[in-house]
Image 1 (cartoon, rainbow, N blue to C red):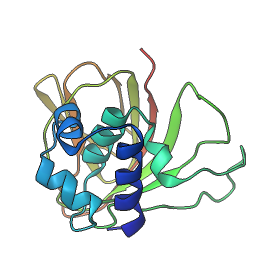
Image 2 (spheres, rainbow, N blue to C red):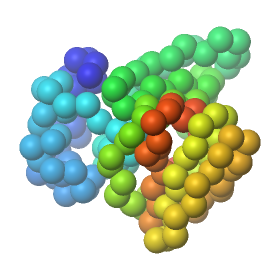
Image 3 (spheres, helix red, strand yellow):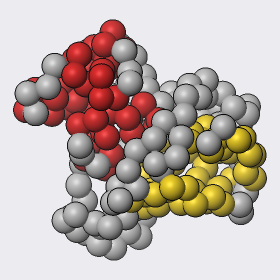
Length: 176
């Protein structure tokens, strides 16, 4: 796991005068797990990262640094949970965007499969591999060139439980 993510998470949490208990209550993640993330002892899934970003009221791109260009000829790949996923931001340099585009590679055999809700919408397009999607208790498998548009206020989760990497295009919005 990236050491700078843990220290950045701690810095953001403290700047918001939030305790680990409060972050745990808001994110639904355990205090011990969050503490281990802050100390760079654990990796996290993209779902956990989203829960942390939502709880801190920051966009997930916040943790990947900003790129001062609106043009993406060859997007740079950034990893936080390099064992579980990689994240490539496709966002331009825009304050308060209406949506956030990214390419995500979900490594094989993700085990965290806990649905959650948050504000906004998600559009997920499978570029390669297979993606399991659980939406309001119903499970679907999406293959390459298939997509789903999700009202994020409905309990949902998507994950890769195959033996191969799954690559997706995610366009998300936190707007209600």
